Image (cartoon, rainbow, N blue to C red):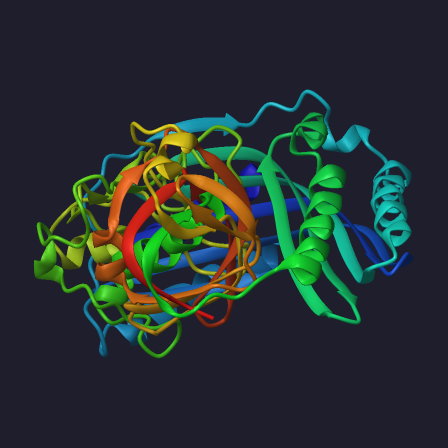
Length: 467
């Protein structure tokens, strides 16, 4: 595969001001179970090549699933011709960056290729058996998917990055119900690495515990009067808020309007770096280099080395997420946020692992001086507008707090606030740190990017809660 990329680059590099060749091969397996029935089980290989050319400020991109040289050669020619035509309509530039040559991978102790489908199906059956025996889990969907992606990126500037990335993902959706009502939960456990981490993530225990939480919420959950009170949120809520009301609005392509008709815009403007958006205890980062993270990478899909990006720093808007195109438009450097979800998609500005950096408080200390409030440990629903400013989070597992103690379950508490109000209300951040997998949607054609969300527990003061 790398040889094909080298051949394509050599053939086309003199035709364009810039030429980029990205070739990928992914071996995967997928097992899907619905209410105890194995509805799908497949293994396969996907491969293809992406060609991106720039000529006089025009960009052309062509993708093909064929690795036959004749077809690849035509793709290079088509990308160059497309770029020439585009130069009459646009004048794009790319930031000047140092080039690298490197190979990176993620270690597997229990390799994906050493675990057969029979073992994976048995895991699903064990979880299904435990859920079914409860009686109240009336609908149950789960699947496990793994992949091993080989990728080679070469550019006419001299970049040459190869990688081998193993990923594993387990998803579930359950509905628990009885004569008093019903509740539902969705979860995604995902990581880079091998199946040695399956036991660490414990999908079986997590799903069964969640079913019991839903059952208790139905049977014992109370509602309160609307009003202002203190709120402690768990890592899952911290994570979705970080992703939706920090990560997305700090994507430079949204800020510049490139995504306005696709995934939305941003309330943030280019001149807002240094503007206060939250309290001083709030620092939200996006970091592709977190070990084991679902969005892990060492170089992005433009060959730029990955690093931690400080989006909100001590409550201030600090740094946007950039690829080379947006970095050039804002006269800065790329910070390695260019990602393509597969070989047939362009590298655009994306998040990886977006979270609040841990603070100084133990989880117990966050509750100690709350006289009356809510602990929203997880969420069942979230909504946010297209500029990522007005948002709502509905609790799934939630409890009353009285005089510093966690009491009985509360059913579906809702916080509906602006981005600035949410982050300005945070007065304490926990020392703990927890992540969960997610798939971030963006662009057209749709790109689902592998990411982690999460963070520590946080305390918000005097926020309006409703039911």
